[in-house]
Image (tube, rainbow, N blue to C red; front, side):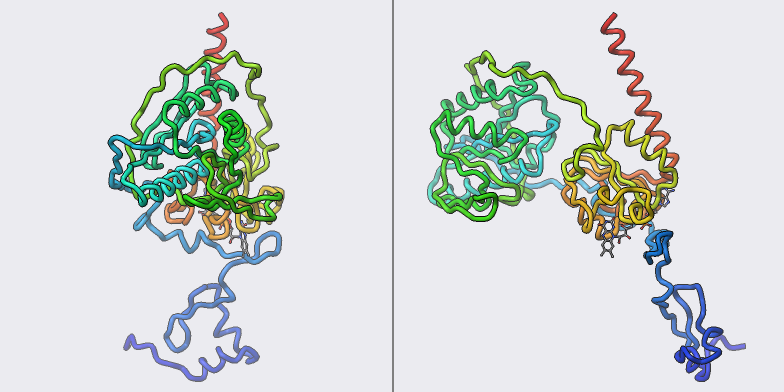
Length: 420
Ligand SMILES: Cc1cc2nc3c(=O)[nH]c(=O)nc-3n(C[C@H](O)[C@H](O)[C@H](O)COP(=O)(O)OP(=O)(O)OC[C@H]3O[C@@H](n4cnc5c(N)ncnc54)[C@H](O)[C@@H]3O)c2cc1C
């Protein structure tokens, strides 16, 4: 018999006519793709997705991705790209940036500020032969490895004991010494609650400069700042000292810089009026999702919710969730991350059993590092993650719990020995 698929006009007509008594027999199929009576492969839009436990229709992304291989993956284990090196041999002038370095690393806000510093340098260089460099002054312990790709030409790292914890008076003394030594063209601070606004105000008062605060559009002559609680813009000439709003400029991404270490002598040691009593432990779940630094987020791939909550506690992470986990009633609505939930800016976003739908990815675009745990190596979350573990969420969370427990135990043993 011939393999040619022959058209059956009568069956085709019945398939098109939803009121025909035989319609169900020719068109009903649980398949999303069906070969119609004409031989053509057709998609049945009524069969795409399924009704979840809450009665809401959803698209099953696992099905679409299950067959996907790891081919064509980007992001994640991104190939190292060697960017062109930008060198400034003997800078004629400096623009000094003082990053917040929350957790010892440059924040997105810090990187925007460094981008702004280079914009100012380019403007100044276009009208003279002088060469400028960005000098970053960083306090405390640094874990940052990307000063060069962030655009730092010179780096002054002040991490002695006197710079540990909250010590604005000592930091100010160092900045005054930088001012006396380098006479920078501009001082840039992030206008943030993480220290930038405080330190910038202190230095402005000390060196008698009138700063621009919440500056968001800056060039060499004019600065636009947000005023009156963000309801109006204030235009003024660009001052020497600027406290910059987030996203004031594009971060550096096309060049690599030297990040040469420099040292500064004769910084006076200040007898502090303020005493740092150390950090206060807080319940990670009491931190608003938008401000959380480390988020453990659950999706439809979580099948053991008690274990998920236990892991979040063991890791000290703030809990987040995909919309499906929320719609299905496993997590409260205020934990939803994404376009219609909270937009998060965590340093580490650990997504467990989340497929990476566009609405979810929109909400995590500002996170520094995304880690995915998923059974599907081809899902969009894995494609966008810096690190992925492919496997069952329950098994991987069990291992994570064990590691956290061992770590705690080792720390406890260590402190016992110290006490003895
Ligand atoms: C207007 C609109 C707004 C939306 N807004 C949002 C929003 O703000 N936030 C949001 O999150 N979604 C939002 N959505 C929903 C979004 O489109 C997705 O449906 C949702 O994000 C999917 O959630 P999920 O990844 O948890 O579930 P699924 O898509 O079902 O994915 C589950 C994932 O878990 C994996 N998995 C399954 N079993 C295991 C296992 N045992 N171990 C490990 N992994 C496993 C699967 O491989 C899959 O990748 C919105 C949708 C619309 C239409």
